[in-house]
Length: 352
Image (cartoon, rainbow, N blue to C red; front, side):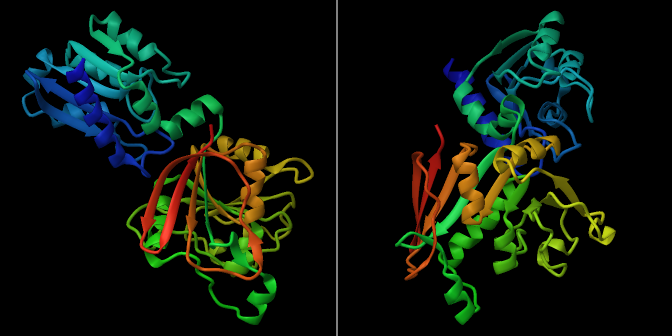
């Protein structure tokens, strides 16, 4: 059992290489072992590409060894045709005699069917190894499949006296950026953006800060921008409407100017007279988005907290203070990590 653990840990380690590129597919890791030696390994390619098992099998130089090998994989091999052929069929075709699986895939097109196909072909299959750790690695995919919503990460920075932005009066007197955190923390946020499929902000954040919501301080994929703009009052020259990144505008106003509906900009409609967060998560699920990074503002973040629709909160506390301003969101969660980033303190919370 200990040896199974070590190889499954390796699967989880290499699976992380797919973070930010595989969505809406899960980021899976696969290791192939022969005579106590790893002879092949692979992780999920960017969306539309080969799955982890395919990459692992292709990496084996001497394919004859596969008939005496054990394949370890963090998530059940697929058994259906999607953008690629079934991985279970490939395992059977290569006559791999044993497969060790971390987690059964909850996707209704798999959900044990991959295991059943392997067993029917005479493959020895065991599953449920490091299940807790595998669930953590596949949390975005599992939230989408089991909860029917994206995995939701909240993020904000607050001053030592609990404000996330200065007062409007101060902004009008001194129209300049009011950074609460240091440059290293801000770069980390860009890394986080590259790891999630979408990023969401409210109208006021766009009007007051005109953010780009990209990953210019990190090497990675820009997330889909999701902007709440009920009245369609965001200026057409705003950075989020520049067409450089796929952008979804959430509104209840039908478009009058068809020019605003461009290739990179689309609109989804919700009823703002009812609770917003639930409608948003349902709409994003229908858009096939399995994770979202919510950066503001306070009203938007609080709406998800009040609806109990969040999984993680990443909260920076900088050394800045404001005499008056916008108060930080109010919430309760289990603190799971604390990190000092030069002058800033980062606390990670999970919603139990």
